[in-house]
Length: 340
View (cartoon, rainbow, N blue to C red):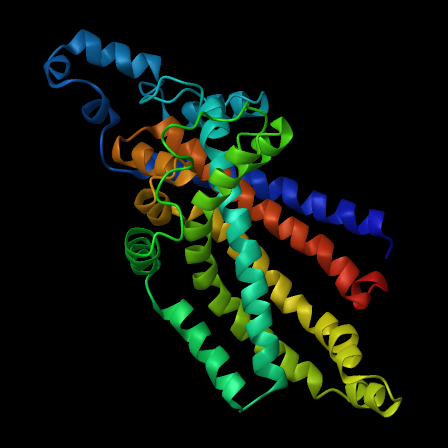
């Protein structure tokens, strides 16, 4: 199977999936029993029937559910995700404001987590049942077992408050200006503007929350890497490669690790999706203005348009991550290329 045919098949699978996601996101947002009128109108306005009715008409709450969905879907196809009841801004503008910070944090977190997790997994598999194996498994167990908010609080207390070796909450020091807006990611924008002091300051603020996320996901990645590599190391072709006189490092890196990466890539992709949409606690603890905090505020204020917008964004992120993983499968697994 050539790459173009494989790509078209994956795209044709994604389109109906996204359509189904819009239905599920709409139904979930409207299944919340709370009334957005009580959450968004002041107390004195709740007794004014005209103001309540005007609010219902403005946000389409007076229409039947199926009409609300058709209107939402039609607007969505035109790139209009609606207007937030809470902020009064278009949802797309709010997402564009908050999402880059989360992408910046999650990307650094997955980079740290991948290097740490794959490294620990490889060490654990190669030196099985040795002190290196036991040590790597203990580190992985700590990462998986400890609550992420506890890791964050310990890191803030020890590394920031007590030792002062990392920067504190926020994206920049208070007196530093934001870099010129291009992507919304401070490190990237600072590099593009040549503002090295702002770049290093933004990066220093990212280190601790990114390491907290990395330690959590590295435990999962490490365990999958270890089990996958151990299975590959016992294959016949590995013994054949050694019998041909290849160096052990070459055998492990080229034959072993390459073939063990397929399940590892899946876990890394899903972990990246989790970091993009599930870092609410980290963003709250580190005062990081990402999409997680925006989603939390939308949920507590019964902001239905924002809830639907963020729910759809979460689904699209997971679909996009899985789509990228499927594309990587094509290059990692030769069975896909030959159509098996």
